[in-house]
Image 1: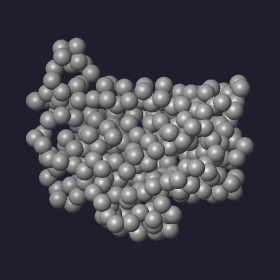
Image 2 (image 1 turned 180 degrees about the horizontal axis):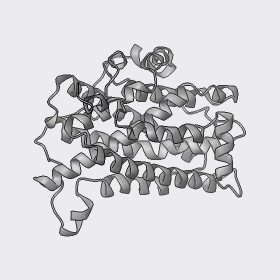
Image 3 (image 1 turned 30 degrees about the vertical axis):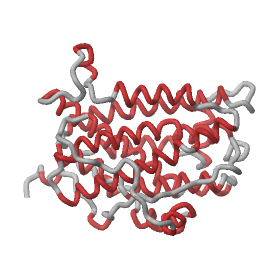
Length: 326
């Protein structure tokens, strides 16, 4: 065996599981604005998920529909189709929280409009450097394929962090101890469990289609910078517009305090996740537990209720089209 072969990402076979979308629904009538009692800072830091995920996961689905015709591995293709179904449900579930926040006096529309612009325009089908020449969406040839692979790689980097957050929330006993709203906890843990369940799909797809290490590092830097910027901006937006906080301000001190208490991910754990992804031998299956995710999904109120309902076609199921079509 060559030395380079030992550096290739190697999945853990036992961590693979067939994927399916679960048609969940949540009743927000009794969920308070500060669903972590007495802790608006941590509540709103997590609430940023509801601002970012609807547009972000719709974008995942859009990009993956375009790339489906390029997948040559049958099992990976099935994984990607399952991933698309799950991400479509995640987008819908978090989108349904936004009207509830508005009813409680916190209108998210000004911020979500900016997020929509980011995913639909800046990361849309027109490569940014070619926009000035008014090229058609995802032009054929090398430029279009390069931009498609860039976005596939960006999704792989983002999914590293959604899996990190999913694993964290499944183990965040401090949220239970603080009396966090059970409906919101079920949403976060159902979503987190599915992120752990499908944590390898985006990276496997990137490896299958490209896998270049320089591209992985470059797009990780893009994704990580964007996530940090959007998250702190979203937290500041929520704190500043919370009607119950006359002078609400987000602070790094509160973020570090919540991390130490286990109510938010610890900054140290987040920092350690960076060299994991940048390692040449990285594979997502080595981080998190499919068994734990499946155990939560087996008992989740929303997931078990979905299992009891008649199955229906998940929204945004893929339809094939020629590579490069919008």
